Structure formats: structure tokens, C-alpha cells
Amino acid sequence: MRFVRDLLVMQTGSFFSTGLAAVASIVYARILGVESYAAYALIFAFVGLGGIFMNLGAVQTVLTLMSEAFVKKDSEEIRYLGAYFILVGLITLFGSGLILMIIAPSITGWFYHRTDIGQLARIILFANAVQISWNYYTIVLQVIRRIRQLTVIENVNSALSFVLSLAAVFGGYGLGGVIWAYLIASVIFSLYAVWAYRRLERQEPLLPSLRRMLVSWDRKKFTYYFKFGFLVAIDKNISGLYSALPIFIIGRFSLSFVAYLKVATAFAQIPLMLIGPVSRLLMVQLPQSKAYSYFILKRDYVRSTIGSVLICLVMSLPLFILSGFLITLMYGRNFLPAVYLSWPMLFGTIISAFSIGDGPIYRVLHIVKKAIYINVIVVILGTIAIYSFVRYLPIDWSIYPIAAFLPAASLASYGYALFRLNGNIQKEQSLKTA
Image (cartoon, rainbow, N blue to C red; front, side):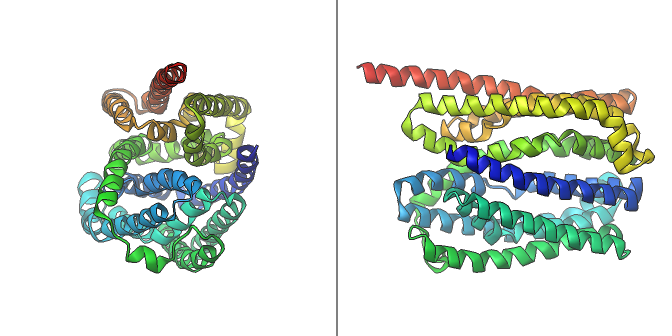
């Protein structure tokens, strides 16, 4: 029941944040135009690919292990996990992040013949890297299940970024203004998170102070965290390719199609606003379910998955019927080709809902390597298919392998997770019988 209450709170917040994102997308598309909006999509696609080298899996590692530690009231483990998160964030900022920021214009200049995309991508990369304190604060709020507080501050963050971006667009600063607004909002909430955490640590006795975390060090623990997180990072980064690769590849052939694909993808992902919070809560819930039994773990995993698929199905049907009217109304007739692209993307969204709990369940079962194998195969085959379609067929046809990209991985991952859960349940029952 607590899971359901928290889910309803996060879904309410998701409506708000998704609505803001939708309005921002519409404003950007209408004011910036097809070409600049395509450049906007390419910037974030590049950042998504670059993020592969900046993601060491610290968020997922700390969220998973700290949830278990909080249930066990292990304050020492919580302190070391916090110290590890800060250390990884600093290494990322001054290591791979700095290198990527330096070479970004050269890469986009070679691939797209546009160095300005790389220059603006630098700002987003820096903004993401400096959000160490913000990311840690939101993790802690999830772990201690202060979901209402988390939902409120995340939506305030979204609202501020939205207001600053709109001010930049209407002020005539164009695409560059939108990117700088993102950075300003990131810095503001990173500073806020430091202040807010210091208040929170006085209310929760298990939470260490920032000073204690900064002086904490344990080589064995950090090595374990890194090994755990490294596999999670590989899995997460490969999954991130699903959204970034299609736009990155197509951007080399047609900027206008990138803009249409961006709109179609955003429209098709509307049903995800209701099930996105499910995935976040499962990062905390599934480790706790495992503490009871594998049977309870499977029950919670299957229930959340089936419920998510049904929600996506119910929401996708009216969107499919009204796609022509809604996309034309929101984005204008210049983006009419996006209507036809949204149909296969909506079908893909329904199937993709099977993966709503794959990340948490694979981490809980310690079978992240298997998820990596599945995702690598899908990414390789999907990339070959997308490039072949774009290169040798009419570019509109490329929407079919793009739409099938994530659903194929989702079904494979869900099936294997059930297989492993059933095996663990049988072992558990055998031990009880013995």
C-alpha cells in the first residue's frame, strides 16, 4: 500500500513535469523552426552518447545498496556509499567529462560539419557533471521514502528550467539561450541540494554529514562498489544508446527528419509519464522485496510490469486515433510528417513497458552481465538495421527498425528475468523443505 501511495504521488508530479516538457517542446519547435529544433535534438543525442564515458553507474549502485543498508540501519555503509558517490562524481568531472568537453566541437564538426553543436553540447555536459550534490540529495530522498518532498523539488527544478528557457527564447537568444538556461538551473539546484541535505541529516540519524563523507575512505568497500557499479554502468550506457543512436545516425543524412523523429518520439512517450515513477520506486522496492523471499520479489516484479503494460496500452489507443489532430495542433503543419512516424513508435512504447523493472531486478539478482549481453546484441543488430535502412531505402522507412529497437530488448530481458526468478524460487523452496 505504501508503494501505491508513493506511486500516485510521483505520477501526479510526473503529469506536471511532462506537461512542462511538452509545452517547452512545442514552444521550441514553433519558435526555433525545423532546422534549429533538429540541432537541439542533435545536441542532446551527442550528450547522450558522450554520457557513456561519464556514467560509472554510481547513481544505480548507491540507490540499490543504500536501500538495503537503510532497512538494516547500517549507518556506516550509508556513509561509505555517500563518500563513494562524491568521489566518482569528482573523477567524472575532472576526467572523462573534461576530455569530452574539450573535443566535442571537433567531433561534431567532423560528423555533422557543425562545430556549434559541440560547443553547445559542452554546456550541457558541464551542467550534468556539476549536479553531484543534487543527484545525491534526490537519491537519499528516494531511499528514506520522502516521495512527496522529492516530487515537489523535482517539479520546482523543472519549472525553473522551463521559465528560464522560455525567457531566453522569447528574449531572442535562440537555441543558445535554451542551453544556458539549463546550466543556470542546474547550478542553482546543486547549491540548494547542499543546503537542503544539511537540514535533512539533522532529522535522519542514519544520514552522515557531508564532512564525515568527505573524510571517509575504505579501499575494499570502494572496490566492491566500483565493480558493482561498473557492470551497471555498462548496462545503463548500452540502454542509453537506444534513444541517442537513431538521432545521431539520421542527423548525418537529414536534419528535417531528425526534427520529425524528435516530435514523434516525444508524442509516443506520453504514456510513459504514468509508468516512469514505477521504475524509480522499484529501485527501492525490489531490494526490500528480496529481503522477504524470491516469491515476493517475483510477485512485485510481475505485478508492476503487467500493470505498466496495461496503462501504456490504454493511454496509447486514444493517442493513436488523435495523433494527426494533436501533433498538427501543437507543433503546426510543418511537423505533419511526424504523425505517420508516431504510429509505430506508439506500438513500440506499449511493448517497451515490459522493461519497466528490468534495471532494478537485474541488479537485485546480480545478473547484470546477462542484461549487458542481451543489450549488446540488440544494439549491434539495431544499429546495422537502422543504418542500412537510412542508407539504401527511403528515409521514412527507417522508423520501423527504430521503433523495434527497444521493444526487442524489453521482451528478451523480461523473459530472462522470469527464467532466473523461477530458478531462484525453486532453490529457495528446496532449502526450506530440506
